[in-house]
Length: 535
Image 1: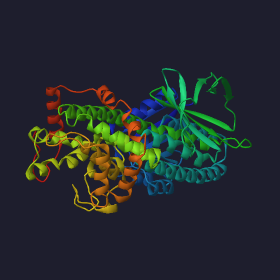
Image 2: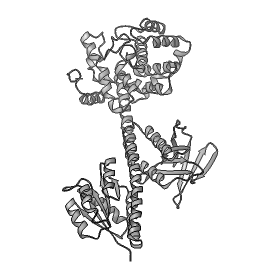
Image 3: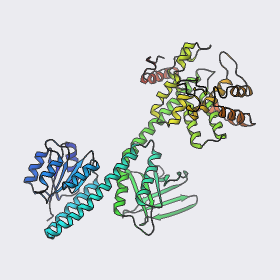
Image 4: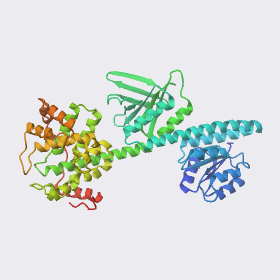
């Protein structure tokens, strides 16, 4: 007949009690579970039931979990006490262990942690039956010391992990965080994270240790075998190499609701196997990162859809006015081409390509009577239209752009002499990328027709920009722009691309759709200078 284990779950939250009870019962019919909703009920059960294990929440009605532990620990030494809480800290861990708790767990308790506790209960009961009390006390003391060190180390790790996860902005940063922490934990030679593509059944490398991610051709096939091991098949052109997991090679799957999301691989020291403690920490890291991954993916999906909507919106706005049609696309191409020629890093060029098309998105908050006026604007109307940079910066806030990308929307009308808007920044106070957009924006405006004047030629536009270097424009960038754009072939290289065709590929909205979208965005914007935005 199987030995029975009597377990108490004391927690004032009904859902926590029921979930923990059901998980324990699902792990074996040898467990009998009792529940208590407060410390007084828990105390009564400790006094009256033949308990082997008690899960005690810190914050309960009546006396708290620490006080309950202190009052009962000495009298009920044979009961394993485990403190649980939803808000763990180092001081709590130390206090629980000082008062005699066998363990300390943070809610929600994982299945792996629960199995470990139940296994410890079984082992403790078996030892109690087979060993003398003196021997058992010594053993418990050593185990307690080891466990204390282990829990402190684990809490430190979880605290560090939570801090890192809380500051991540996108999935790329998450993947790098996983490989970086895996290397730190294992001291391995290399760590890589592969994202699973369920359509093709393939794994694509998205992060490799501290190096740049490899190209899309670096893909793997992942197959689990019945023994719990796995085979990794790497496709590299015609070559196919298979690697079986070895003591120096660890592969851990990341699953969400049973579905494979990715695989973390670590190449360790060939002379040394991975310790179970390290493998448990790695698995805990993956488990805790799942919610962050899900949230970041949702955020990126929403941001991508919003970006597409805003791009289509600005294209539709510009399409109504033949003078400004495709203006944002042209400005972006000019700015990115110039940035590549300087040259700037690919990351900065990418930021220009991403934020450039939206640099005038704030104009959706400007009344059509001003935006489409066929003659010069009055001073009052100019004050209204100058609000578009502030409006634009608020509209793109949900996109999770980098600060340098948001600066393009907010500061592309600042002037080197401090006479620009919206903040009147001067010289090096102006962020770098908006200075590039300002030059490209001016060049496109000069070379485009306006209701009140004809466009100027390419050469005339360059002379205008040169004439205003050091006043309107960054002097170094302005001279570089004039020099680069004066070189044969550069103009053709920019406008040789079918820019109008490229812009026309973006979806555009009907007049009614455009009005409704403008209304929707403007309703969400806070008042500017105390005035509500009206279309």
